[in-house]
Length: 60
Image 1 (cartoon, rainbow, N blue to C red):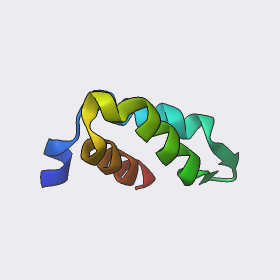
Image 2 (cartoon, rainbow, N blue to C red):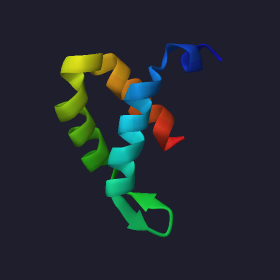
Image 3 (cartoon, rainbow, N blue to C red):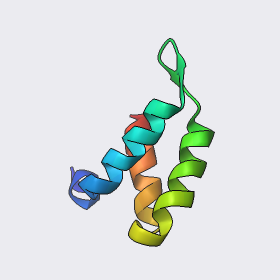
């Protein structure tokens, strides 16, 4: 799939770490917190579009 080729692995792994911190239990995550934290921490390095792509991909 094309989107898989576009995802920067390091960015995706960072977003996964934010998701682990925002785990609410029973398979639920606070995605708004993940998205905010990821954008705050990663936009300067990877760009807003890349971070958003990783968040969406992480949601599955």
